[in-house]
Length: 259
Ligand code: NAD
Image (cartoon, rainbow, N blue to C red; front, side, top):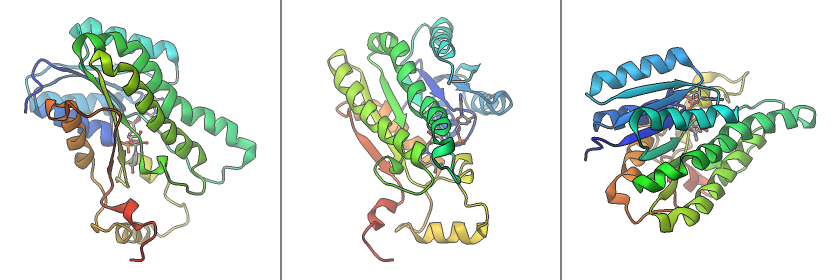
């Protein structure tokens, strides 16, 4: 499989899942436009990608909560490469804690802005380019899109919105040749997961218990998600749109099952 001469715009590319998606596409010779709010980490990931192939790697440091930035990101990517073939919306945050009504609104605003609105805005601004290239969009949702958990209201709501957003845009853009899908990761050891560790918990026990909760007795890895993203962006997935791919080491199978 090769993505030579393809242009992949990836948000949240400075760490975790976004970083790994960038690396896997770099290995397949894609040109990359990598975006993140964290400039230092982004620089490091861009270097990693450059060391993997001859492809061009362009970096954009921006806060996706600002809608002006989102338009600029698309304009600069088109300016650099002349087109966009794949948009990967991976940037996201999760915040857990004693979130009660008092600070709920602020939390919802912030999380929805990054996890949902920025993806919708990017899709809006990149749509024309994606229609031209008959490209595709890959959104990173979560298994929490269809589950509930304490203290993660804003996150769960945001990911449910990503699922619906994926399907609506898939329907809207299908006759224009653009496919739109999402991936719902289970527990992947990245900053997003580290941020929701219960503060008082014995961390080793937390990880052991978490692994036990997975029928495959392993957490999902960033490259599990990245390989799915590569598949969805490839011609092998040419008949797939509007779908949600759960990649979770079997975690969601355990809802009604005892260990
Ligand atoms: P991560 O924290 O390693 O990566 C998220 C990236 O998004 C970071 O590099 C961060 O700097 C960037 N980002 C955050 N706010 C931003 C903003 N305002 N503007 C631009 N960039 C911003 O975490 P991750 O696990 O790789 O998360 C990637 C996606 O995967 C997220 O959407 C997350 O919700 C989703 N996800 C993660 C897990 C998991 O267990 N790790 C599970 C399900 C879904």
